[in-house]
Length: 520
Image (cartoon, rainbow, N blue to C red; front, side, top):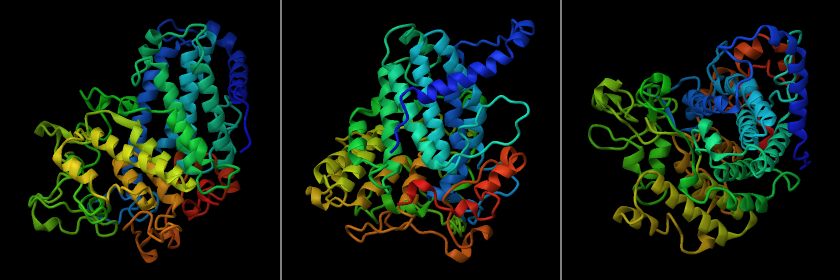
């Protein structure tokens, strides 16, 4: 992979900012409002940005969760269930809004203010969040606008897209810049001051450093279909080892849950998931169909119908057995009743924090990388760590009898490393990210083209995963599943059509084109 210098992107960003700010300095000098200062300190930018990361991913998760086969619309055959899109609508466009507006110049100015005050911890966190934003956006949309993003030019109305290869180069460069600043100890570095804006790690730079290494590992492992020019499993393993050491390092965005304004987007206060039903795919991963034994996490994560049976919905037909009883799957995540009924929610569909990255996810990344490399002992150890960590994430103890039995089942964890399969790794990772890891799971599904077999074993990687029939796909798909999300309608199709035509995004089936990251 072509390397960008550690500070290159940061310097370009700051140069562009200095030009844009200097042009309006005199205007600001004579039009400043003491009640609304135009030079806001970095601490005041950070908390709202962290909150929007979680909320906006949840927004689009309502649709992407159908692509992922996390859940389906209760009646089935929604546009998302059929891998389509929502014409002339901003549905599925919230991640775009997050990166270019909610984070956008707010994040740029946080970085600039941190630079001016020599608060290198805020600068490092800023670069880390910019890297996360670009990675999330490119994995979701494919080509995105980077070089021409955040140009404050009132005469500019068209913004060209950059290909995904450039987006990934930018992500790695920003991660390197983040690490360089987070490791600095001179200047105004202060855990107390960083904690003022840091909702997640309370100013602990060591955990932010671990997050950046985890982000690098996540990005690199997404490129596992690429040649050695881009993908290096040894780098993934090394970066995971420098990242989260346990669930105590998980990046979790907290919410107060006092009202819809400060509640988890997935939780019962906001009640955004009452029309969705858990998929049959996740039920089969946990009821013994795939792993030969009922998963002890199942009662924590999933729900039964009134008869106590775990059932799942189908993408096309929805919850076909709803008529069995009026209570059947009415409350799939503890969310469909209104908050005044006292429903606390269930698992991540509660008023708890929203996970951005977890130790379990990274261990499965390491397991997959080691499997690809042929280091089966390392793969098995990481795989075990991932399962155990997620069991604990669910609030269960490793000493619980049901957990001991599950972990002792060779169909779940083989004793011989050579018996570990890619299907085991990816299906357990799916379980560990179910309900919140919307983009990361979609990356995995697309890497293996949803239904690919492992060339080593001939076994389907995502055992039992099915797509709607070609004839059942959304009308514009030409029988193909989605591989990218179309850019946000109102900011792009209304105002930036010439740029969209250059990348083919004006075509009805643009969302079915495979992304660069998953191609050989």
